[in-house]
Length: 121
Image 1 (cartoon, one colour):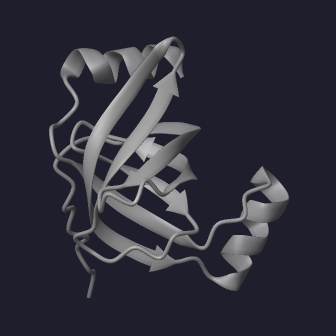
Image 2: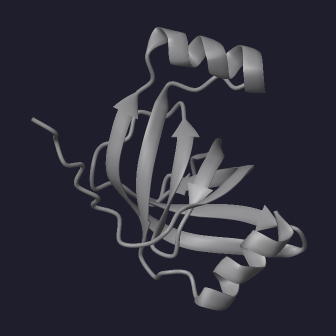
């Protein structure tokens, strides 16, 4: 019997592959880098080394060409990379990350912001 794949995404994803900076929202001023894999109107997928919990809030700053984006975010899902996935990311992209995180923007990107990202990344 053929299984149907259920698509839960609300918006199209766009490959971005760039770096950003996360600042935790708990007044700690703790900041660390992240690798952005893709972006959509409503959120972003990042690779991180920080062990977040679902529901954590933070600020994400990233730049595309000459424009900076500063977004308040909520963590919706986080998964560990397997040993092999980590190894491939280290060899192929020189990334030392442990987690893949799905993040929701508190305020969605506008269509003009998405267009800008697509035209300039």
